[in-house]
Image (cartoon, rainbow, N blue to C red):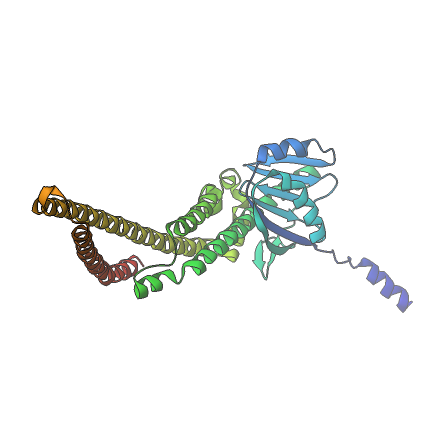
Length: 353
């Protein structure tokens, strides 16, 4: 009898419900996507459900909840795929629509779970409230919008990571230039090298600032304010605002450095032109002296003939004197430049910082 009562009591206890959980993977694979072309191609696949929500393409395989969000600035956020092998299949399908692919994809990984009523995020796990609704389609629609809200923060984060790494590479490649300029009075890089560095920085900055959603609250929340708390939680956890401020400061410092280097290289180019002008003037003076000297010699010689040995001696003397004067002028000029430019460069760069 006792055994029977225990069994009955156990049958009355509800079984614990299993939390819904899974992976979230975000990838930055290109500078941007051709969104409309992608939409047209994916819509032809009968096994996919495709839609647009505020310039973000949403794709999901029918009868599953494996949501894929494609952002125009080259980022893909994938929900509930089993492993990276399935992620790779998704990225391969989207590869034809990439514009300016990155050499290597940037990856961020998280997990999600549905539990409780208050969204939160810690230790790379975001907890979302389980939504109860009699209408399954309505519940699923709300779930997609909620996932999109979180995906916006994750997409911004991985895009900023790409920019951070690119800026870091530029900083590492140019770190020695200010010290080199202050020490030697010149830099080893050419104008073309500096222009390439500047172009790379401008390209990366343009790719980020071109899309306002990368650095600001996405327009998606203008009409979906109820999901903004989920976005804010992910945004604070990923420190998006702080990272943007640090990036802006670093970009400004690097840009100021390039501007100063450009000025220095322009000055160096101008100095070379001035040296060339000095040599041309010296050469002109040399020709004038030789011409006048030959005329003097021809007057002194009977019959107007010039003694060849005297003429060669005159040309030699005038040439030596002219070249010596030109060399002295160029030496004094370069000495003055070396004494003045490094201090000016170092002072300008420090004041910029």
